[in-house]
Length: 307
Image 1 (cartoon, rainbow, N blue to C red):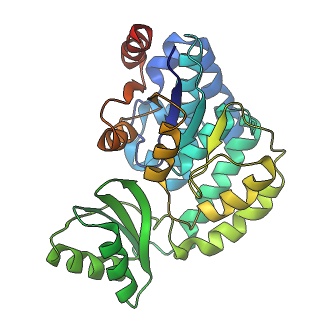
Image 2 (image 1 turned 30 degrees about the horizontal axis):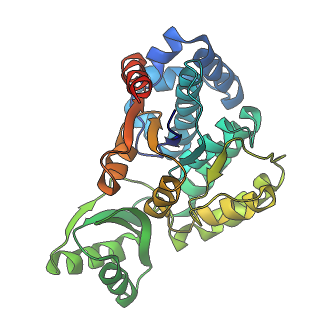
């Protein structure tokens, strides 16, 4: 059978109803949500299944909810006998990948992600940070315009060819956005409350370090590709990499290209299909499908069996 990589979505993929179909049909998925409810200290499953969306979209709720939903989807596809050769996740999704791969237990992961989310949410006063997706310009040109701006702004995500995200102080993001439009780019402001993967989150990263240092990290099986350096790493590097991940650009395109050298196909495990879309911009024939409910799981398994 061809080799397959699993990828897990990050914040922004959350949606009311996520995981409920898998909860209802796969006991292994249900066990993830039930355990997450106990660990989170509130009915995280009800928030995922019923909302309200305004609450689910808040960083402090979205991150643990996505972790649980991604792991439930992973448990569902695992029952079908599909074994990945490697994993990765976008930002928060890297924690889902590390948990799925056994590098960290669910009991450690839920409170760790809650701490991460709280630190990120509190790092920048509401309304002072911003992010924007940029399409249609060379990365070097975008980087140069960010460097010209006196305010804090830089590339926060390298998503795929022709698409990056800039992140930083809202005024600086807006200023650079105007210059990018004048240079021919399409710029779409993102509805986020946290300027993720920017220097504004450095203090949040420092605050997260003590919690990361307490984790009893284990060797992941399979390997997990880091957002920070787009490769697999040794266990003793995990803490430093996850500290840096908070304020460092997400090298998603670079990570996908690295995985393409070792895996023939990708399956997106968890809510939405954002990562599938990004990977298709790199190679449209590499994505087998998604696993976010019973229907998508069955469709993806059919494709796996046809290989």
